[in-house]
Image 1 (cartoon, rainbow, N blue to C red):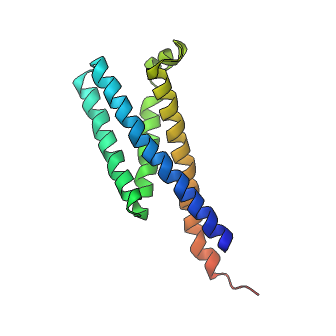
Image 2: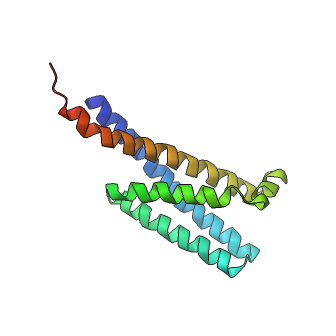
Image 3: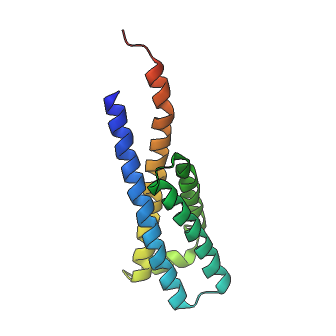
Length: 136
């Protein structure tokens, strides 16, 4: 029982830090996009997504378990929108630039959020069933 609680705490802590890092990296992305003068619809749609991520991070920081499923959804949507863009791969092919490092770091962060939040939610869901099993 104690090991499950320890594992849950570690998963939660790891997921929390990846969510916070995603918010911080999102600020860097917004600054880069603003400097590049991307179309306003693109900038504002990414800003809206970042604001949602910020709300999730606030929920996570205040200990709300209900913030984790939206974090998972936002990470999946972020990767689903970002990964198919050929422009992002041309950035990576051009060599290590701030933009390519931001893309790679963001993708890795989102993958990490997906893995840790999913693991946390699955283990947390199993926890009550494990407590209900009588010992002996």
